Image (cartoon, rainbow, N blue to C red):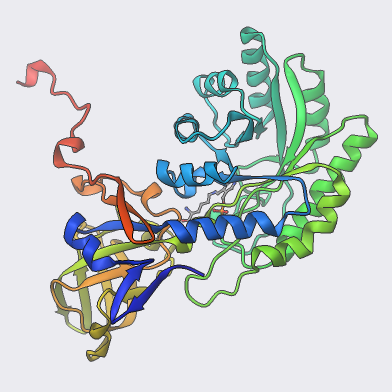
Length: 420
Ligand code: LLP
């Protein structure tokens, strides 16, 4: 459920007409609904209230400071994957004791920063990484809290680019050899073994892969217990899907019902790393139609947003709903068309072969369900300044990231003097 709907023929976010934001901020812009973010966070959190847990929001899904701050105020933590995300999480006031750090390529500098900050745990993805963390912790005279990330070889039945728990994926340590790695971990003087981690993929629309992967994880926790290693935290990752088109993913409480008995039996504190399920449907991308054109039998609506602003359709062929900001547009004749941006690539599309009303230049269009992996994956390709981000709360709206200026595009670039 989200707070984007039509009132008096116009698309609103909460109490604010999208058109009003467009007039003041210009397009394109991302618009996030504070009420929706809050609601999604709380629904998720409350679904697991019987289990001791921490909700560590996956910062990569939406890294805006205002969004992170909102979750921090609800008592949320962060799942990070880089030094940059650590910086953001701390800047948003997320306590380091609620930050977990995954990723196959943590650099020395990133490990130092995380140890200095005093994060909850590193989710370690290889024995070389484990040895590196131990040696850095030793140099710093500290102990590094760690979990090993298990690759349980479970098929999440999602897009191959966002599946992470299959044996052919680069993530984690095989569930068949992880006990050996735990033996190594406990032998290291500057490592404190506190957890087990798994994350099998994203946009998962069934409960069964979560259950299968969790059973394998708990099996490992039990074997560790038999060997005298007591695990404090089980981090079950993120991955719960949302409705973009007609998917019917399990709701957080469906997932809770299916896995709660397993979680409670473990006696551990559970860490969740939801991203998309909290922010995905809490954000839209608003664009203006620039032109339409017809080439032979194909019609294109050309808008001012492009693949650099929202990469998901180009990258994963993913579906985003398209809605006019003014409902009267829906009354126009329907045509099958692609929605494309100004970038010089045929892969630059936001929607393909959709039956749409005949949009005219100047019409505002909303690209729905863009709150997750939207702005956070955007780039400056074709030297396009990144768009503004806006947060609506009730009847007010705030620009929570200013639109970049063309001057920002060359920030840090230097022309060597021999070229002058
Ligand atoms: N934890 C870890 C370790 C992750 O790698 C991810 C996402 C999450 C949690 C959050 O997963 P979520 O709950 O959002 O599914 N760019 C792709 C998605 C990539 C997901 C990467 N990892 C997309 O736009 O669909």
